[in-house]
Image (spheres, each protein chain N blue to C red):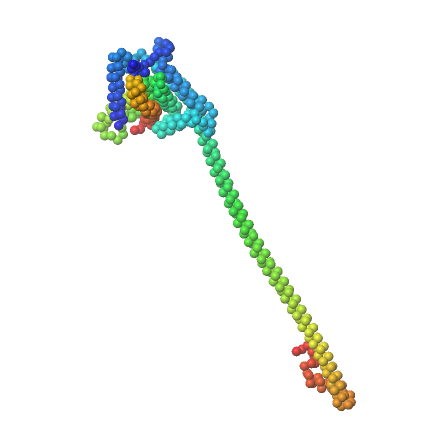
Length: 198
Length: 242
């Protein structure tokens, strides 16, 4: 394909050269590009201009641009690295936070469990104490009741003896033998003697 | 009426003689110097701030730099790094000369066969020297394609040699002919505008407007082609493979 392109260019050039010679006949001097007198000044100034531009480019422009591009690249890379580092830091901070949160939660749970155990132990002890106190009070009350009952029974016996004596005296017209009467009453009501033992 | 070829005439503005060589300052020299000054303005003055966030002119300089840097990197590889300033200069010089040639009343430096041939011959000679310097006589294996039967080599080696020596001509004539044809065409149609006058001259004028756009593209394209072919030749000399 390249060769066919060359062919096309060669043909085009030939055509232009031909047109140049035709124009030359009209008195305009042909293709000015082919005038050998014009070669030397063009080559001299091409060398000067090209060398000048080459020096400007290689000494000034290329170092300036590559320096700038490097600096920009370094800046972008530095920013990216910083961002990466910040991201890493954030991740580790989040991890530390989460670990602390989990630890704290665990501590709280343990504390609550311990507190709960202590509370129930204390409650049980208090309950026991209450229970004991109540039992003691009940026992005392029972003793008191028994004592009162004995008293009442004794009073009742004495009353029965008095009533028996009075009834005997009215009926028989003479005072009764107190001891014998007491024995008879006691025999009639055996449960009243030795109170408290039901 | 002027000839379309008149625009290519070298006019001596200042007669100079350097050691017996005619070094007159001509219209061609003027536009070469203008091209160098403008290129310097873009690449040195435009880069003066070396800003991390580039302005307009700095962006232009950086885009040009990276365009050629990428071209050299892709086509020559690491071995081409030290030739990068030369390729960049070549591209920028041709590009500025081509584009400046489109300015009315200017002179197109690259429409002169002697200029394009001098550049192409410089590239050709330079590439050949680099090839022999790097590979010695082994550089001649460039003309022997690998994996080809011996009988075919008898035919292929002469073709390779001819195609190698035709390089400076194809390289220079391609650029020269493109510039010559484009500018001649513009001038011819410009002549039509004058000939047809205010009544019929609009059609060729419209054509010139469109064609100038095309010429701008060609101005860039030919600079690009010259630079990339130089890269390919350089790659042959540096890496010696087909």
